[in-house]
Image (cartoon, rainbow, N blue to C red; front, side, top):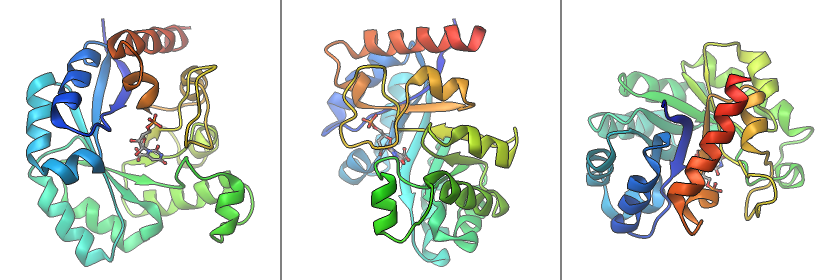
Length: 232
Ligand SMILES: O=C(O)c1cc(=O)[nH]c(=O)n1[C@@H]1O[C@H](COP(=O)(O)O)[C@@H](O)[C@H]1O
């Protein structure tokens, strides 16, 4: 059985919890994601321990956003960890994204367009006017032009982004919630089935899996639903 295109967000307070979640979900999913909470507490060692415990690919979500020289150095610093994916903010602009791409040559650089926690009203308050999908498409084009091989967007925009950038770019969607589950701090959400039907290549899912009484069973359930969509 091939694993489903899901990156489980290991947003855990400690390494023991992250390792337990990773072990529970990795029979079912392709990827685990290490984010700021674990990385800032444990540093680079967390990558080796998560990878060693599971054997699945590791997505390092640091959302780098700084001047190009600083991002170049940060990308060089983490490149030796060989994460499969590293995030940067697309709003950092062409030169910054290019600096990440050039300095982490064995890692897929994923540019985050507009955070899925922001509603259209939130975006308007920070100066992003008009439909979220317009801003996301603009950022996507900018990032791909700078060499990003992947984009992070909400599942609500994934079809529009796919139409804009074509088939060769990996589209990653957080903001995924199974029908009936709590949206929590996410604003632009859709179900896993909808995200895949609209063209997402990898779904980032955290709390709907890690907050479940049985994270392994929750991952298996979502993976099964995705398999049915992908084989239809
Ligand atoms: O880059 C990300 O992974 C990311 C981008 C984004 O726009 N929204 C977003 O939620 N994420 C991450 O995706 C995960 C979502 O977690 P849950 O809301 O618990 O499913 C978190 O680890 C976020 O840091």
